[in-house]
Image 1: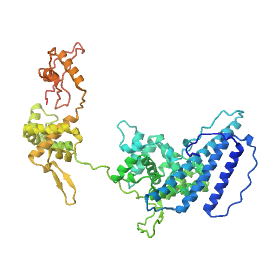
Image 2 (image 1 turned 135 degrees about the vertical axis):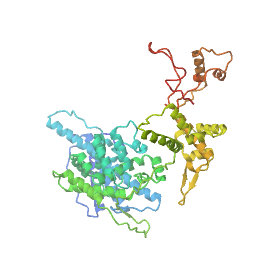
Image 3 (image 1 turned 45 degrees about the vertical axis):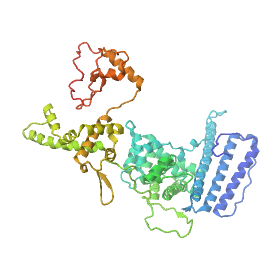
Image 4 (image 1 turned 60 degrees about the vertical axis):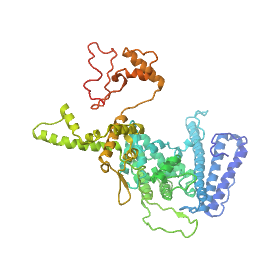
Length: 591
C-alpha cells in the first residue's frame, strides 16, 4: 500500500477487509508486548458483525488506520533496538547515520497517515451524530477525502515561509505582520534571549494569522507530529487527537505569550523544516558559519541532539498535563508554565565525556546555548562611495564650519549658501582641488574603469583599489587586512575620489540598450523635430554631429540632480509662455 496514496476506495469484499483490520490490531498488540517485554495479553474474540450493514468507505478508513497504527508499533520496536528512548545513535559513517534518520522520518510519515484517517473517521462520526440530532433521513453533509491537511497539528501542514527566511529582510511594501514574522524567524537563531519576548509580542499583537501559525506549531511539537523525535517517544494517535482538542480550548495568545523560552525552540524546529527544503541555502549558511546552517531534519542526517532533547521535554510535559491530569479553570496558565519549566531544567554541566567505545549512544541533553552565536552571512566591506562621501564631507566642513560660526557670532544664521559663497567654498575644497589636479588622460581612464565596472555605488574600496592597481592595504598584528583612503598617495587618492564621483552619478542614471533600429528611429525623430531633415546617405553619427548638444545629450543639474533638458510640445496652458532655453527653471550647472 502506497503511504502517500490517501484516496478513498471501497473494499469489494467487506468480510475480507474486516478480517484484515482485525489482523492489524492483533499485530499491534503483539508488537507493543515485545516492546514492553511483557507477556502477550489474551486476545478477546471479535464480535460478529453483519458485513452488509457496514459502510464501505468507513471500513476502508478504519482498515487503513489500523494498518498505520500497526506500522507505528513496528517502527517503535525497531527504533528501540538502535538506542534507548533518551538517546540517539552515534553513527560512525554517513550510512549508519542515515538509517536512523530515515527511521525517524518514516515514523513521522506513518503517524501522519494514521492521524489523517483517524480524523476522517472522527469527522464522519460527528456528521452522523449531527444528522441524528437533526432527524435527517439522508446524509446531507459529507466529510472530505483523506488528506494531510486533515491533520493541522502536523508540522508539514504549516505554511512554507522559506521566502521570508531566505530574504531575511522584509520588503519595503511588506505588511506589519510579515515584518514581525520575518524578525521572529531570524531572531530565533540568536544564542541570547534579549529581544525575543518583544519580538514574540509583536507577532501576537499584529495579526491573527501569525498567531494561528505559532499555535499550530506548538500543537505539532506537543503532539510529537514532527520528525525530530525518537519514534518510541511519540504518543499514539488517540493521545494526539485528545491533546490537540484540549489545546484548542485554550486562549492562544495567552498561551503563546507565556511560553516564550519554549517557543524559541519550537520556531527553531520550524526553521529546520524550512531549511531542509532549501539545501543550497542551508549549505551556504553552514559554510558561512551561521547557526541556521546546523538546523536540519532531513531523512539523510540526524537532527541536532539538543533540538531533539528540547522537543522531547516539551512533548512529555504536554502529555503529562493534557492526558494524565484533569484540566482546570487555570489550565492555560498551568500548561504554559509546565512547558516553560520543561526547557528551563537544562543540564548545567559542561564536562566533556570522551567516547570509549565505538557507536556509543548519545544521551539527549538540552542546553539553551546549544546553537551557538550567530555571525554575519558576509563580511561588510567598506564601500567606495561611502568612504569618499565622508572625505568630501569632512573637507567641506573644514571650510564651512568657520564661516558658519563667524556668521552666528554676528547674529546671522547661515541657512543657505549664496551662489558666490557656494562657488568659493567648493573651489577651496581640498578634495575637489585634488581631483582637478589629476591629468585629463588619467581622469578619463578612471572614468572608463568606473563606467565599465557596472557596480557603481556598491563597489567596495578593496575592489576599486584592485581595478585601479592601487595598494592601500594595511595588515594588523592579528593578521586582519584593512583598506583606507588615507593610506594612499595624493595621486592614488585623486583616482579613488574621481572614481567615486563617477560611480555616484552613474548609479542615479538607469540606461537601456534598445538596439540599433531604435537608435536610428530616434535620430530620425530628433531631426524632424528640429526641422533639419536627413541628408542623402548620411549616417546616424554624422547627423548627430551637426545637431546641438542639448538635443543629443542628457543634461543633468549638479545641484538639484534633475534632468535639465527642456521639452515643449505646445500642449501647455495658453497663459504659459515658453521662456526656457535648454534648461529647466534656474538649473544652469551642467556636467
